[in-house]
Length: 485
Image 1 (cartoon, rainbow, N blue to C red):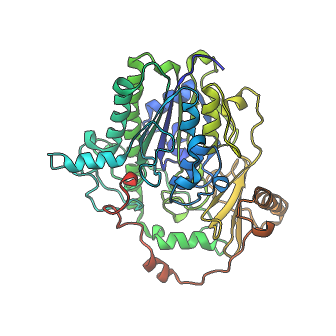
Image 2: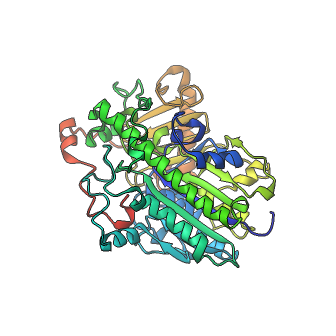
Image 3: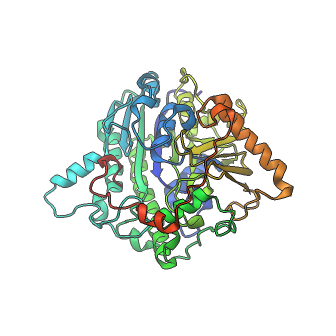
């Protein structure tokens, strides 16, 4: 590996879909800095969150393990799941790096450093805003952090959490870093996670753009719709969003992505000011996606493309000689971040039980890509869904019922046509079902008790009962400050 050790910048967004990035995005979407990374590096077009929730994805980044291996498959404490001495920042520090976490970490307890030398969190931003002499206060629009409704930011752009996160990274690069040591900075933006509340000019930027229509599969309104999917749609009333509201929500979502991208340009400029940009390894991804109305769903919850397929770009230093502008269809996931960055830093011992692969070694032909990537949603004692993909075929299993789905992503990337249950695809469905069962049974993940895929009876509650029971909002002021978006 080339020397000296490169500086490393890990950039993550929160809840950004793959088709809201780069060449997969609508032509009107403005992401010049992400596109610059693509042109200089390699885009992994089959990158997935194996458990599309904030905390599981972040624990995977920190440990090099997939969610069903490290065991945290919900949003909860991270301390028991991230060994301090074998976390990503600890392993890089052992290679001589200074390490800083800037932005949303979603660790629990909130101030758990998990090996980072420095940590600057959204809680610091909110404390700063609470003490400010000016009258502006963020997130006073009343929308919660999972509501799929548009709003405008209640602070000017320069006072948003997105702008503040970029500014903290700029200050670290310009003023606080140790110039005698390579650095690892995790720059973690909280957007475009709801509330969908961009400031101007981003609020208005895409309101007149030709919005893509949500993907709604032919299976969604049929008797073949998995009960778990139907319940999630009704509990959140996502199936009752008026088309015009959903259109405005999508415009706001894209506006938030462009705001992140423009602010990322400030971070890149700080690197350039010190002649560091070309020789810094930059990895960009998101923790998971957002249904955004696909299949009449909101948020994440299941393993469909909108929720799990994420942007993933690695741009190594120019001096390494990697041909720029490559794409790779090798299946990638968050567990790959640790071994990829550790190898780039000069090697070192990967944690025991590491599931991740060095993605740059795959490009060089030194490591074989994984053949199949599997994932889960929900806790092992009551999973909502399980499944996996080989890059073409995607198989989904729902314990409630049970039910299953099969999609051919090559010809149906929007998952409009469920092939499960069709005689001509019975063998494929059985093959992938067995693949998922075997991997969980052999890995002793807890998701295949006694070596079998779990089964649960249908609950039998009515749509009216579901709609009255759950609402994703009403928690703006009382949510832990590190995860206020």
